[in-house]
Length: 289
Length: 85
Image (cartoon, rainbow over all chains, first blue to last red; front, side, top):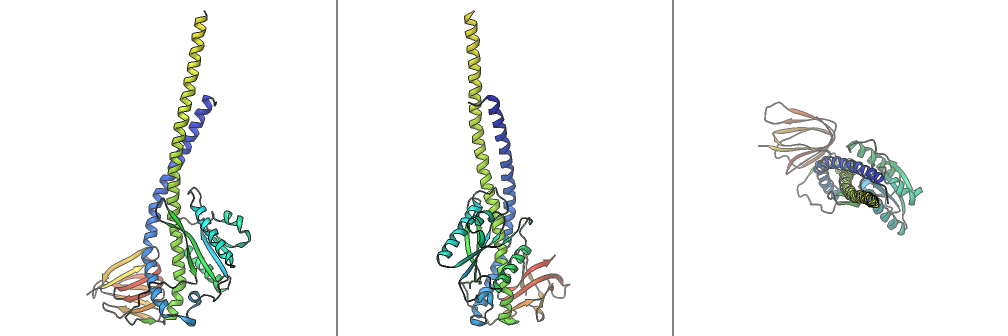
């Protein structure tokens, strides 16, 4: 049985931990609102670009299509672009993303493909390195950016496109968490390169004039589309991180509360036991006289 | 008589309003868009998009970089990577 002083110290330390988790929870809640607003603000651009891409891609096909749309023609080397957070304290978010990436990798390897990883964010590096130490092509550090900006997406996309053009891989998949709510962030895999042709193409009946021609416009739009996708995934990551962090810290705060209650009961019991023992000793002593 | 004009960047919807005319710096030369323009798609070079709110008024210019313009039934949509406010 722990002594009274030990219990008292323990309660104090749990209380201060609770204060920290509570503060972190409130910070995450405030940041979540901002991250969600940013993710929403990015939607009009992405959806308009996707519409334009869809109508253009349906017109340009075959060998005249740019490399980014057509692909290298092979399907052997796969690249998994895994988007993780840079900070911890966000529950199972990162391990879920890594799990999804590993599932995809296993599936591809079982099909006899070569798999390499391209990591974005710090928290995915260690767990993926454990299983696929020599498969990591590059690690893109985003820890010094405070809010996802388009420049980051720009830099990542450019790097990816140049690797693609150099023939380092044939197909790239993007693995990132999709923010559903503060409680649910689903890790999702989408094909990034070659750019998949959208299915829901509405055939535009009007004769659209192009300046310059379709191919040239498409060639310029495709890298931009890749950038937009990466930017979107960075925004989703940000919102997911804050959401997951808020939930995790809420749980931690509640657990700390439970622990404090339990320790307080234990403390009071020991205190009362000590008092009772003392009384018995005094009474016994008095009776002996 | 008004043209629906939208200017969108990856981080936000900058403009969505009814205007009289917009002059866009297209890759192959500037072009003005009025209401009822034929469907048209063009890349644009870095430069100023000029917006006339009313006929004969003073144009407002917005610097854009990395852009793309589309004219459709819904009006003019300019997608730009960066906008100088």
